Amino acid sequence: MLSVYTHNRRIMQLRRIFDCLTDYYEGNNPFRSKSLLRNGREERGTLIRRQAFTKEQEDQLLAVLSDSEPDHKVMNKEEIRIVFIIGMFTGQRLKDCVLLQWQDIDMLRRRIWVKQFKTGKEVTIPIAPDLYEALLEAEKWKRNQYVLPKTAARYNKTNAEGKNVGNNVIDLDVLKPIRWIGLEPSVKVPGRKRKMVLYGFHSLRHSFASFCAEAGVPKAVLLSILGTDSKIADKYYTHVSEESQWKAIEAISSRPATSSREKIDRVLNLLMPDGNQPEHASNGTLQQILEILKEA
Image (cartoon, rainbow, N blue to C red; front, top):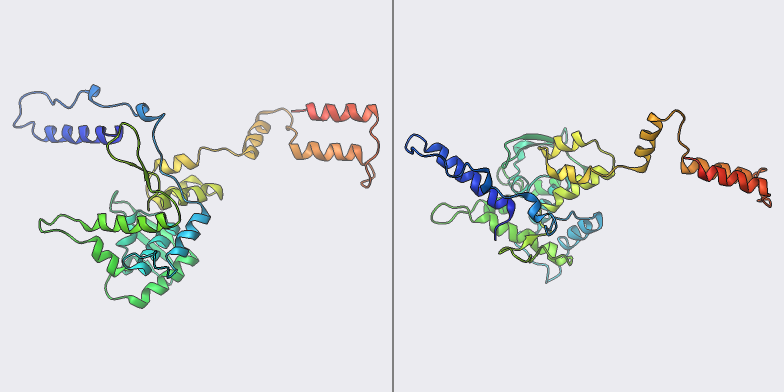
């Protein structure tokens, strides 16, 4: 069984093919019917969503990619570590990170320019200190236009028919350290032929969005880096803080709402009028405290 997304994408592809054949085909486009498209709500209850890495998990990934454990072997391990660092500090997709070129990096101004392979959009991203150090390290093996020459060569590998086969190889390479830290990249879902991905390199893009949201970075700034009005951003910018909700209530109220901190301070002043030891609360004092706690 195909996912709703894959099913609808294939229907749209067939629709475009038949649209191109209108000069040679007299009938109506058989894929124009809206009834052929499936509703995304079908999977709402069972859909497995890609997970973001925590900061601790990202640190673990870099640790296992830096160690010399015999069980932690992957081709071009030093370059794979830097691929992860690029992903962590730019939020870009795997292909954009692996095929990053020196001509798109300004070490002096500390900025990176990326023309995304998937969307064609161009973004410019400041170079974080950790990424700057990684790029200095990569300069030591500089031999062509690619920041990661060995990994880029593997990614660009094609078979006898000219079809790219290297991208799948690199996909497998980046899954290894994820398994090393105890995470299972994909899970089996009933009713679906293929497993659904939980963790992969794309999880770094989710992490980037999550960390920006937690730090209060405006959504528009995040989108200027991710390069798209991504659903990823929507996922992490839907939560509203309690402080923001209080500001909204105060904005529409005739008098400011009493915050929890203000209530606590007023109760403490009643219990400790001299600011030292608490006094025995009289019935009148207790009544005042109750009134404070009832306030909006």
